[in-house]
Length: 458
Image 1 (tube, rainbow, N blue to C red):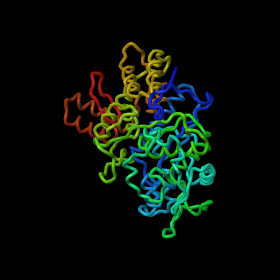
Image 2: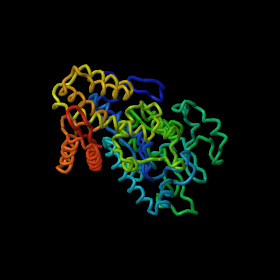
Image 3: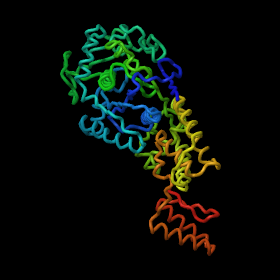
Image 4: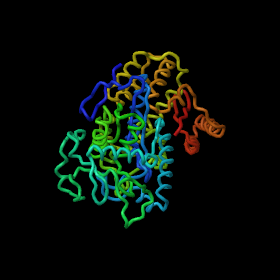
């Protein structure tokens, strides 16, 4: 079945045709590990995970590369400000190297919590300094660079269609009026290699043909993606914020060095809002996976919430919306526990699901199909189980742990449930409520049904 993906470069849905049918190359801009990645950051990673799962669901072999930025990302994406790693070191009382390792390990843990498939390659910028230097030298030989007092810069005027990805070939006029570095030839020019200042002691710096310093943020992605996937690969993903600066700069580096657009398809997810507004540290609404857990939510609930919105639509996060997602996922888990073991799936439903996810990852439609399947009284539970088992390879909700697996509780919980049944039989409602509260403290909710008490996990 055909796969349609929205390409930010062509600005329309395109039929996806792999460069190499035997192996699809996907590159994702990963985290800058100066701090804990937020749920806003993770929307981009969950989107990329969904894309890779969908490609594999279609029988394609995929090599997925996601970089780890552990040097060179300044506090202002446009090459001004302080290196985020150095700033994080000062604020958190650890070396820049310790900061990077701590938050890289944390990122891997959170990937598992969100059920994100581990990328095939997770290259670190600091492990690829030579590749970045080599690429800058190629750009230099081809006349795309110049040197000023604080570093080596890319001359964007040497690229015919610079900025085409963001929709304007010329730099934004407002941007041009804010000339933060008057030595630059053009406001859109960006750093390839920054020199270490004699006034500061940097923890992360290297020798280079141009002097001691560190690579710019943009060069790492081009160098590492080309190393792992070749001069031109299939798909590059990232947040919509990268369309303005980072990705146009990556593309310029690829065009200048290899004459390619780096990737044939560029895909971007929209922002995650919080309570209708921007996620911001100053507003105290930058949440992490651990904070979701502290509020009583399994991070996979956030994954379910993400799936209810299309990746190219802004999604408004609230604690109420997360609670609604939790209720829906709990209900789904309870229902699938009652099904028989998976047998033969429903071909009709499976085709409709594939049509949904192959239409630019239409997960809202896919989730709607899940509930249509669940509520379809014409299908046997075993058929539903097999169908949903297949779908979960894309959805990543971990439903295999629940399908046809009745809830098993400890003896302590079962004694409380039995005692509550006796209390209700004796019409001792107060005792019944007390026992319900004790059961809840142990992590279970009790529903009173015509068939007796039904337990579900909180």
